[in-house]
Length: 111
Image 1 (cartoon, rainbow, N blue to C red):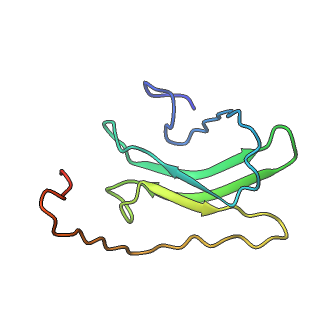
Image 2: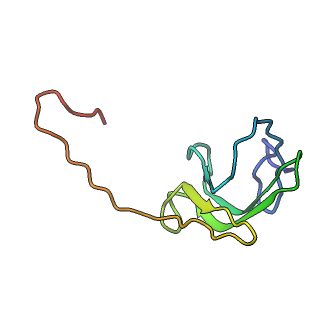
């Protein structure tokens, strides 16, 4: 990516990173998120392209979604399943979860 003070994640740019890892096995999904900091934290993610530099596996995750508290559904975390030729991809399921706290004295969260 080029442009802006940081030079990263600017509109209409491609940012490339090389990450050195040991074998992580089969990739079933990826999760992309950010910490919602900065003057303009809204981020539109087009796609993520992953390539195994030691092998021939390449994966493309087409997001075309906002990671933003102010746009679309307000999520800053996105998950997408990996798509492998000839294999079914795993679904990404969304759940609505309700948490109920108990009534013990001083058993509360700060906030």
